[in-house]
Length: 241
Image 1: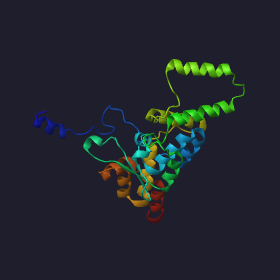
Image 2 (image 1 turned 120 degrees about the vertical axis):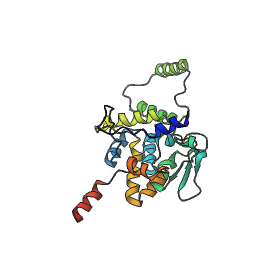
Image 3 (image 1 turned 30 degrees about the vertical axis):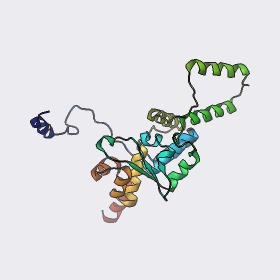
Image 4 (image 1 turned 60 degrees about the vertical axis):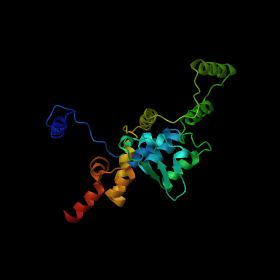
């Protein structure tokens, strides 16, 4: 590309909100703990732990589902997870997720001897779900039912319970369905990252929030992820307004 074209593109002003016909997406908001807590009984044990790990660490959904024992350093008080592939890998940046005691408590029951296997195993989650359905069924499960199910899996050449990581779409779908069962407004797993950023900003400041999320630009954390605390604003207004 000619240098003059590059410079001209840099001088193009961004679209101003409300001044064009372009659609204006709603900004992503943090999800309240009450809404997170409401869906926990309606997801599998593995998805529940995955949600809690993201709530406490601020990891992206794709980062959380890719967690394996091999990528986890448990030698210090805070565990260190070096994400092998993330959205800024092409820039040559490293992404480290630090996991404190609350996040460790969510992950610990799922650690396994096979360090290459995903810690949050979709195959194991599917197996537990099927076992729960089998235990709750009212009618007797006849041998013909078992043979039919085995034949169906053989025809599809599919081992539904083989170890495998969750996909981002599967986690989104599980949360959406759990919201419906809980009777609350739908929220997405990506909002957990926003919630973590907001809590960290209030607790330790914007620099700590940016470091946890892996941002080199504090403005990104401030403008996109760390929503201002309404309670803090109300307290300041009550004192000085």
